[in-house]
Image (tube, rainbow, N blue to C red; front, side):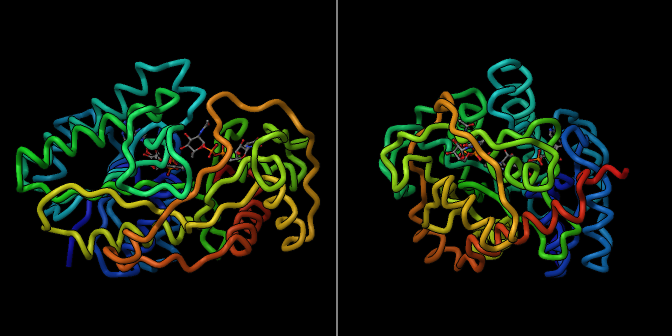
Length: 340
Ligand code: NAD
Ligand code: UD1
């Protein structure tokens, strides 16, 4: 059995991945400082899996904590989710982002090396492609013109890992470039739990649908797209979770650093999402048009052939299931993981 250290495992993508790992028989050790998550997510993961995991409340920037974990548990691989992810916030408090996402990652890689653990799956983002390229985006396209500090931290960590693996062939590194994660476990027990006003489309849509917010502002109606609104490649979080298992199973102990796009390869516009949400869930989402958001691009979707052919990863869920499961989670948990 493999022992996997999951940093940031209490978060949105991390909790769904922990569930998959437990279901597949892995031993799971989570390290999370709960800066953007709740322990309740992991309680529910263990209920769903009917298996337990080990939770350590700690920070990836704490070297002694990391050394203790590697010493106590025979870790075979690390899945590294921990970090801050709010684009707007990253412009206001850049040093926090550099510290958590870049210094924190370096601290983790150093601890891995001290413990002779060289298998790593890193949560990257389609944001590393910047604004230069026309979709579908593929992994051979150059990266390097990110539009915000959050995206910059992902790019820097990718580049550090590439250099590291070039210098030291013991490393086996998977960079998973997520497109737009949405949805929730079909049980509705775990899902995305944004703090404050959501930045991303899907949690905003479900909060309007449930009456927690008055209406959605659609950022821009004059893009060169099918209906003028932005097009994105939404990917169900269960498919995303599965991509981490595919990366572990197919890449572990293979020397080098390689990137894979994790998206469906299909785009949907904001208006298409709203219409589909109504058709599937029978709930109206009130909206108004607003100016474009800074840093947004018109169209972004993946060429996912490399992940399909090399990782054996095939997305199973379409937009319908994404919208159904997002709504199911929101309805069952109007306050997220907070009770009352
Ligand atoms: P999330 O905020 O739900 O999860 C991140 C987790 O990391 C949280 O549980 C948080 O408490 C923890 N954490 C943050 N800083 C930490 C630290 N210093 N030490 C220990 N734990 C820490 O975010 P998510 O949506 O699950 O994203 C997971 C990863 O995927 C992140 O690295 C994110 O940047 C990346 N990503 C997310 C998206 C997305 O849209 N959700 C898209 C692309 C990439
Ligand atoms: C955003 C981030 C990106 C990050 C990704 C996943 C920006 C500029 N980009 O991407 O770095 O990797 O989230 O976390 O913030 N929309 C609205 N109204 C809303 C919210 C969104 O119309 O209230 C539109 C957007 O303009 C876009 C689409 O919905 O066309 C999706 O937006 P969002 O969910 O924020 O994702 P991205 O913009 O792709």
